[in-house]
Amino acid sequence: MWEHNLTELKNGNINIPLPSAVTGWEDEVKKWPRITYSSIFSYVVESVSCDGKAMMNLKSSEAYQYLHSEKVGRVWLKEITEDLVYLKAEIEPSQSLKTTHHKAWVLVSKTGVIQTAGCSCIAGPGRSCSHAVAILWKVSNDSANESNMILKMCKSVRFVNAGKST
Image (cartoon, rainbow, N blue to C red; front, side, top):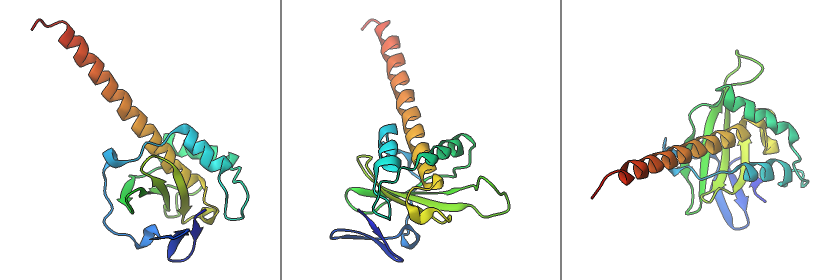
């Protein structure tokens, strides 16, 4: 389990800085890890929270609405280790237009395993606020759309090539 403190995250002998201390973020969708619906479910329901118990965050389904309400800003990526990346975005608050956007982040392995998360909102230290989970939904949704688009392009190229004689 990842321990969160004021300056870094710790897991065993791995120490990494918090996203707020990291520079050199990239706007590179092609480097996003593939995040599946099942990995999101596993993280928000079955993962261990800061109190040592399963998160059981069934309310995080609200995060899916952030995606479709276009409240999730641009997702930025930063490779932290050979296997870990941060994803971060600003999320528009759901209740007030007068408050500033929440700064949410997620630490994910390059294979799509969700490690931990945080946010500047009041629920952020709980590691599964809707703002952080909204980033996961956006990455999952955009990756799935890109994969479907590539598959359709490949099928259409095969169809066109099948009609040509060589």
